[in-house]
Image 1: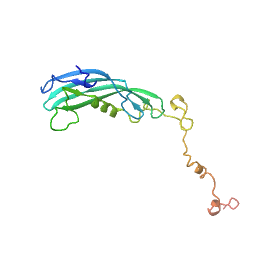
Image 2: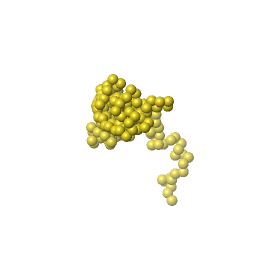
Image 3: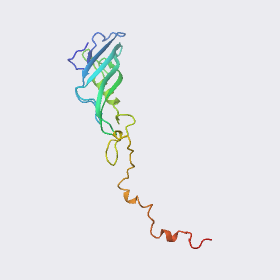
Image 4: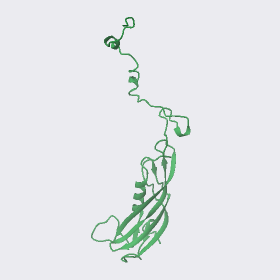
Length: 190
């Protein structure tokens, strides 16, 4: 049972407050109100977040344990194509009863608001360097073509343009190098 007044991720816990040993479960789907995450992938605003939570009354407050599932979208970090993948996280947090001590999460007006808890868990689970598949070969450094689309293509080694002037150095003889180095005279063998 959910009371939408405090927030979409809020769960009414009036029946559990100050009743240690009581427990119940709740499941609900809520759309993300804003984009969650930054970088190459994120959970877009409006994407449904499915939450399954077990609420247990303990002496200090309400212990919320559960899972949250949603989908993220963005770009592959290697070949830059669009990706869309599921993400599932587990969470557990004690929502303390208001008192003299400051707590990050508290029971407010007989509700626990899971939004910050769920959002933080999901954002931390998003991949930092997302890929479309684990063996994504990326892009050709010369042409920019996606190597996965060209199965016969092999990545060419790229030469840093700052070193390109030195590329032929080893293959060209240096002036005076042959004069000072001992060498065999082809006319005088023996």
